[in-house]
Length: 294
Image 1 (cartoon, rainbow, N blue to C red):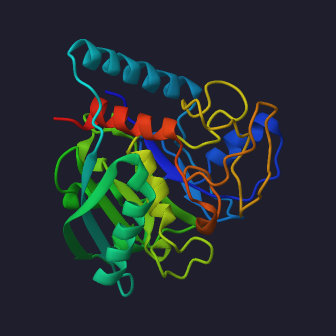
Image 2 (spheres, rainbow, N blue to C red):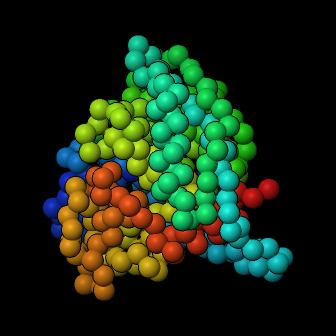
Image 3 (cartoon, rainbow, N blue to C red):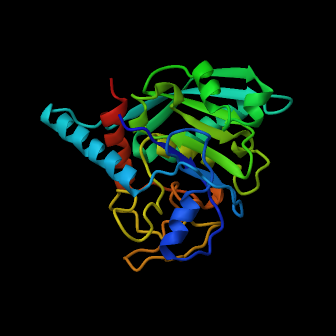
């Protein structure tokens, strides 16, 4: 089974063509042996070690298409409506014990962002773990933390909060890695990125929206830059590199369409993120059917 991570890093970019996308997409990832993508705050320069390259993405897509083909032969169709059970894993130390009211707001943000996608989120549980080591460095302690805490099965979202360092806002696993490493499945976000947090421009809860998008099978909008298969979704215009802020009219590729800076899978400010495309919605449904159905 394929193993892959995904993470979110909205970093400021003024870079050269193909190098820009790969360099920015490498920004910040968990300490793990799996490939990942990360979201970081604008201006951060942390480096992601395990970004899935073109060959791994191609392998992931071959496996995905093969699974879809087998589902079609069996007469199974992707679900129109998906319900995700959310396990909030609040890891804290001397700070970081996120209150229930903030978690409720984060759940509301997810439900509003995904409402038109047929995906809804319901609270399964809130678990609080006082562990200053895990809280202050969830990257280095990811395996221990997740092996000790993760709950539920393939359709359960474990949503971890902690004090991510180096400008990192969050990361997530892809659906294709669940069967081989189920204990690592889930998303990890900076606790101050939740609604009302202190991370200016990244405190409306859309780090969670972005990371859950990866958990549901979406790549970044700038995947592969202006060439290749991009993010494997036909209706997201190609984008050379991540957006920073909210640069309306930005157009980094010669292909039709301006950059999708309002897409939840770019690196724009939270206030700039408003949409998923119909193609992304279809992909999430198909990824769920291929990897998260019983």
